[in-house]
Amino acid sequence: MPDNSSSTPSGFDRRAFMAGAAGSALVPITARAAAPDPPAPAVQDPSAPVDVTLNVNGKERRLRIDARTTVLDALREHMGLTGSKKGCDHGQCGACTVLIGDRRVVSCLTLALAAEGQEITTIEGLATDDRLHPMQQAFVDNDAFQCGYCTPGQIMSAIACVKEGHAASEADIREYMSGNICRCAAYPNIVAAVKQAAPEILKG
Amino acid sequence: MRPFLYQRATDPDMAVQALSAAAAANNPLTQATTQPLAGGTTLIDLMKLDVMRPTAIVDINPLAQGWSAISPDGENLRLGALAKMSDVAAHDEIQRNYPVIANSLKLAASAQLRNMATLGGNVMQRTRCSYFRDVSYENCNKRKPGSGCAAMDGVNRMHAVLGISDQCIATYPGDFAQALIALDATVEIMGKSGSRSMPFAELHKVPGHSPDVETALQPGELISAFTVSGRWPRSVYLKARDRQSYEFALSSAAIALDLQDDTIRDARVALGGVATVPWRAREAETLLKGQKFDDGLAQRAADAAFADARGRRHNSFKIALGKRVVARALQQAVAMEI
Image 1 (tube, rainbow over the protein chains, first blue to last red):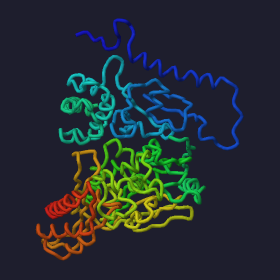
Image 2: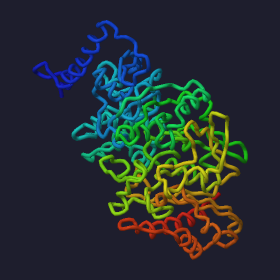
Image 3: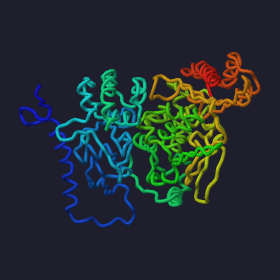
Image 4: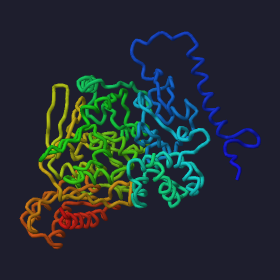
């Protein structure tokens, strides 16, 4: 079966459009940076933008952001990396799961400023050239999603679950994947996908 | 979320200085305008909900190098306050000699949250009372002292039956704290004028007339470590909840026993999910000590643990449930093969 997932017949796809739209949010910031510097405030203004450098998928990204910006919003709104999803925005659903170092965390409760100097890996950083990460391939092979919204978080979480050594049994997988909610209830297939990918990931 | 100034701690002294800068205006700690950021799983959540409104945040994660050691040193245990829940839960010696600690952590939250949340932050986490967390409710004595309590006659299925007052019935939501209080842990606290320590049992305050005062910790103070004397291999944490995983306790029990030839030499019983603070059930312990264990004794101890419990419209079931959890946890602890 031909793989037509990377492009559409019209040459236009939703992901490129969304990423482009998010990327365009950078324009006003660039414009502001080009304008003459405003006079320095006498006391520190908590609303003033701050500079932060994030290491995302092996690339350094310099951003000027509000201190309130979470890693999730930095990814989605400032870098055009919309793979990590915003579900609950309160650490309850797992859709925003990314790896910081080798640990899975919820990016919606992680301040971008607090993640400076650490390596962030998102769903966009998994595939190499045209080859999917074994966990991505396992989710495709096992039909481990329906709507797909929780899938990037499920996959990031599943990779960490395997590397932590918590994928030895179905019971373990269910327990240690419980932080990722799937409202389509694709759980049996998600468990099957994690089981399939685990040996390959552990082999390295 | 309201704007805040972000500062990164460089060392413990700098952190406590920054946190105590506006100490006078910062009382009580729950209302402090400068808050420490560790894992962030409570603080950032409550800031998004507009429940907590700090104007400055001191990120204490850079202190982790000195404050995150897990040190089971022969007969004693020391846990750094910035150790992650997941690391402590997965530690071999903790699992072997303090299963009540390992399991209280393993059964809490999700893998992601356990990777983020620290031990110090975990014991300081705020209640999950839905009226506290939703600022559209005017009446919350924790959020707005003197405003009343919407939970008293509201939907109070998740609320406490022990340690309550006519001002507040919000449940203390954590798990790990029950293990600490059962094991007579000590908490080490770093402040502007140096370090102090106190029994963990004195850290949390029942709501009484001031539900907004939740702990004995003062603004400008940070928990640096917890210590436990002795080893407790015969210990369990049993948690009953609405879902099998990733859910707060309806009722939980932390049990530690010193058992010799079926006779209980020492017993520790602590309750979670049913009280306003981490709850030590000393009446149950008194009944158990010196006795030979049987199911009848377990039942009498469970009854004693809930003798003072008072339910409201939706949460009275927790009294019956809680007794069964205590009795079953005792049976499990006795049955453990050490």
